[in-house]
Amino acid sequence: MFSNSFPDRATMANLTAQMLWEIGAVHFRPEEPYKLASGLASPSYIDCRKLISYPRIRSAVMDFMAATVLRDAGFEAFDNIAGGETAGIPFAAMIAERLGLPMTYVRKKPKGYGKNAQIEGAMREGQRVLLVEDLATDGGSKIKFVEAIRNTGATCQHSAVIFFYGIFDGVERTLASHDLKLHWLADWHDVLAVAKEQNRFDPNTLGEVEKFLDEPLKWSADHGGVDRLSA
Image: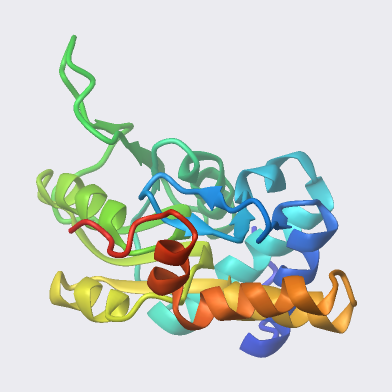
């Protein structure tokens, strides 16, 4: 069970960013931009899934996430923890263990055979569900998962992630319009701040990443990627 310690938000953000750097989950490469699934060209890339292979770090990060959710949403706010397929599943299991709650997971689409289920595990009508994933970009996948959860008769008004891009306008407003609040530990600005503190890259690399964070769609278009995100 979770130890109920509550570091302040800034400390958790800084330590989460440091840990992501330590395990090699973050990459800066402006000279050869990454092409993301959205078509966006990006000088930075993050892989939160690497956390599952580092027990001490994943434990600290999951403690931070439990603390964030309890503080921001409430100690008795949830009846079920749901992981989004696939990256959210292990983190949902760890959070459910800490909070002493049932765990389920949500498929991206019904599996197409057998019971044609989209929700795996026991989710009941009226349960208050926390959706857990590894990260959030524009929030689109969160809305689809939440729709599947609500179709069971359960409610879902909160989603928790380790990492939030935090660079696209209107994401939180869009989620709020679907009655969904996002909770996160760190964003790109936190990660960049640690890179600067630790002198991890030359000034030109850090400068290009900062340009991307300030104007991601313009930076993408200037480097061969899309200039808008699809709805």
